[in-house]
Length: 179
Image (cartoon, rainbow, N blue to C red; front, side, top):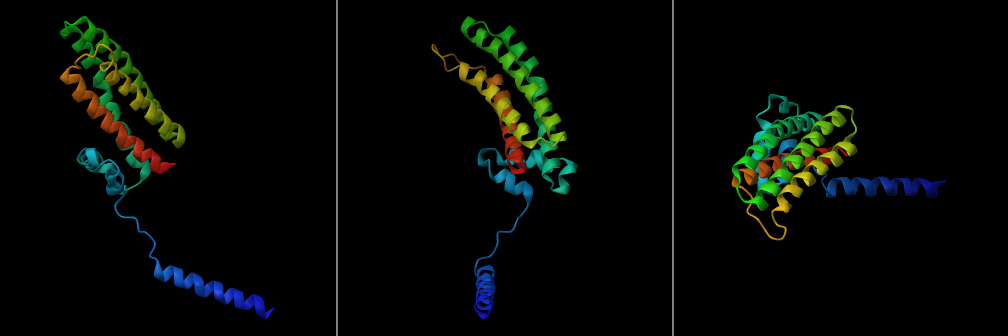
């Protein structure tokens, strides 16, 4: 019996030593933690998450809703922008690729709308997968301009796609934290 008590005291002393010798990491500001994970788009991330009044709660579900809303708002304008570019482009190779981007933009938007429903239903793994699918869909458009023969992607399309990809990346990081 005395032997088991000695072990118990040894365990307690060891745990006391561990807790005082190695400080536990403390959580700082949740928005800073999230936005630090995308250094190239940190200012966009901070602006997107902090300017929304809902962000004061520092809650992952709320931050997910904010990032979803921002991505959907941006994504809603992309199909019409891409359609207008189809009419402006004269090069048939570029026109065909831009036309394909209309479908990619519509699919990405549908994925983002589905992400909103999944987060509302607390299906975070599926929400994360659908956010990644939206990002992949946007990449298909971008990558189509690198095919043989390569074509120059219209600047407006590049800028709009890059912004939406950055917003979706914020969403992916937030949903990663929810897993």
